[in-house]
Amino acid sequence: MYRSNDEYVGADGEWVHEAGVGAEREVRLNAGVKRAMDILGAVALLVFFLPLLLVVALGVRMSSRGPIIYSQERIGLGGKKFRFYKFRSMVENSEEVFTSFLDSDHEARAQWEKYQKLDRDPRITAFGKFIRKTSLDEFPQFWNVLVGDMSLVGPRPCMPNQKDLYGVYWRHYCAVRPGLTGLWQVSGRNRLTYQQRVLLDAQYVRNWSVWRDIQILARTVSVVLTAQGSR
Image (cartoon, rainbow, N blue to C red; front, top):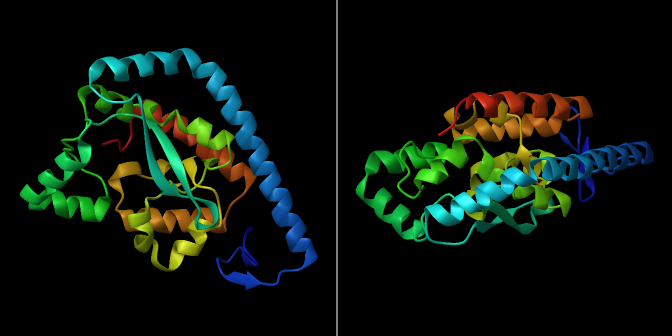
């Protein structure tokens, strides 16, 4: 059960108003446990992977022009916007390249509208393909987790222009911190349509538990190591 302003997401997915003191206490306890897991996990993983992070940063710098870290505005808990960080995997003029490509390739545009992903993305560099396939580009988001913008597990942080794609499930998205990984990432990853991802995000929020987060984290390791569903 999660809280969003003065409303609660119950186990059945319905929004419950004016929950009692017991429910309030449960919400705070759940949020505290999840936040503690996030901080401890992010610190441990940052320390463990620090040498690898430095190697990736050097690879990004040497492979193409542009900054090592890419930042973008995303939407988080309660609908608040924050800066989202990744190792840069695209060319410096990615927006121009992207617009031109979609204007000239109608099949690619249709694929983007359905999946919000492309099989052949002209923006991605050769080194960028490698760090995306291995999810190494996501490592700077440990900082987002530490400062409280994100969680280790949750819906993937969406861009402002993707808000309408959530439809009636937008309140579910806003009820939790977005995550480094989540239910749809271990249930098909980029093979899923965006609407399928939305439904899985809502399912995650409705059925959250500490054990479920642990299961998703464990499955994420397997998905990343085998590159299941990567694009």
